[in-house]
View (cartoon, helix red, strand yellow):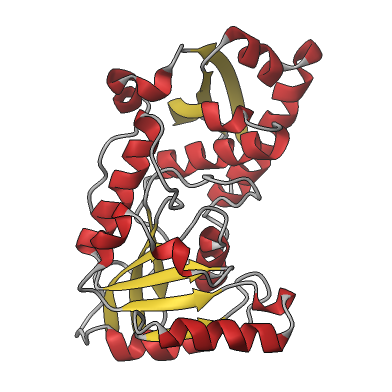
Length: 295
């Protein structure tokens, strides 16, 4: 059995979470067209009879951290690299500029597989030129053109990882699991996904979610109470919306996603509160869960 830890990394909006959902044939990873949807490294499992991969879905790489939250996100990438055996670097542009910057030092000494994503959106002659260029840099063990959304090129990932990952007598974790994250953490992520879906412009980037309570009633219904936090009262008013309509839409979308995940009826209660400059306040970052995660 081929087992090991894999770090999935790349620029924001390159398709990392879409690839996670494609590989494990579930939809636990949140996906949005907006950048920086993933904020912390999330651990997911791919299982079959011959393999178990422990995959770090890392935050998208960006040139420079502008606040405490973004510094936490860069630290999350670094921690994933420290623990992985293989790096999957996903790109849609094929530009080597995406491998520049301080974070690139984290992946030195580890085999890197480059996944040229969204290849179905380009003329195949352009894809071939990009693949040839990336192979010519000498920085990658392999370069594979793929489409995470359509599923093109996915078998090639299996072939390459079978060559790079070690053999093990038994799986590292229960093969029935698809994630090593707590249910509570995934529920928070699903609510954040709804925020990204229903809020415009820059507003999702100043919001976060903290699960306050999650319990089951005698009738079997799961009760979830969560706090949505932002930085200003004006943002709070936008999140709530006229007559509470925006918050209601966010809650409805999140509830359906949570019910699908838990396979249970859910009563979801959302509150909104403003915490000025929370992304730069260490105590706030820790309180809201933006602190080192360990395997």
